[in-house]
Length: 234
Image (cartoon, rainbow, N blue to C red; front, side, top):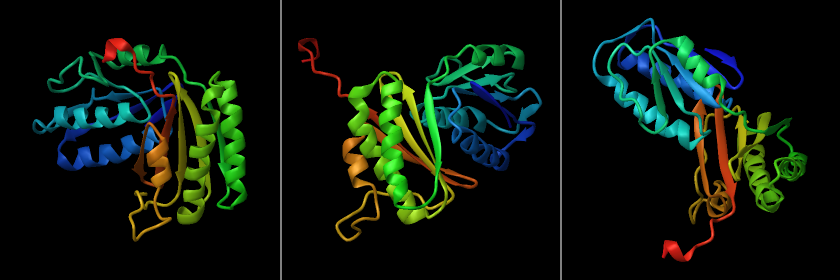
């Protein structure tokens, strides 16, 4: 895997079968955790053992577009891959694919590494407020502070590892992500599980989710102002 702003390149070589695509999924998750603007899949030295690749690419693209919003750009696929699907673009060679990825705009972002202590929640709120101002989205400041604080508190309480908090502008929204070293994925707390989940994040965020990585996980949430209902929508 090769990382360079604003995109990352994953070279997949050899036979693409069930086992290799599982490993490719792990590599892709680690890549997406860095929140690139796009992922280029270099398949120029790969060959298809069966027809699994198109379905794998579709599922990967659906997840990557949801978070972090990165399209998958496929270079030199060894078997037919539908072009034009949401989140997937196909090019004949790596040079063309990288050229397309290189011109993508870079999303403004702010990051900080935090220890697993209660004081980190206040630092998360402070960064969230400053980030929203810098992004030109001050109206999202309060909501983003809440989401950043809740995600950080969840990592402090349950992961208990050092974490990286990243705030990134995505259109007219702000995505808050906390990356930690604990592979246990979060969940919404039920009646008998108070305090162990992220029910407040689920209630306040436009969308939220988590991604398992080889070194832990990322939990993310999107802050956005609800689009007003217009007469034309009724």
